[in-house]
Length: 257
Image (cartoon, rainbow, N blue to C red; front, top):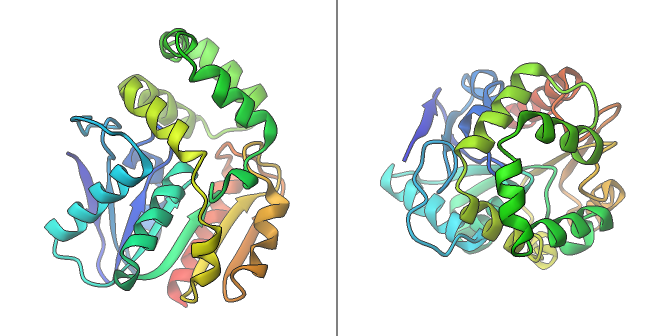
């Protein structure tokens, strides 16, 4: 496996998003390394970590993170994630609650109810056999990939470096892992866990995100009155320069508190 270990201070363990890698956090590591020891592994079948044998589920990814934390001898630490990585972070925190000091959740898919209907339909269609294996080949076309993301997922104005990172990640990702992780991830429901969580938590989401129900995330205060909810205006699911700057400012401020 491959991982990033950067900075010093209380550990911050991060889970990247769907078919992502540690490169997706290229702005986070340097920004938070003065206050935290930032630890980011490539999850199985993503980046440069081998897939190994299944299952490839939210639970198996959380167990992978737990084994990673044990191997490094981490005591109490913060845990965070992006999108499906946030789902992994929630599974991790729900199973090893005593080890987690605070949560950092970016665009969290915390319940089937928080996923937009259009995106659910896309997942059902694209992960169904044999359609998925056609999609798995098409993801290797930059033109097809850019058009799909531009009009159905990310929106315009994505930072060119992040767009290249995302495409490189697509080429490296294991298709079996991608399919199984996504299909399992959209079924997970952590509302009861969030309702019982009373430690610090930060939730960040873009106002124009096309995957999650932003209003549902705004209303997480009903479950987590202590949580800080940051909705970044004029941004969508794609990492534009506006979103990158705003998320670093929000998370950095939260970690320093």
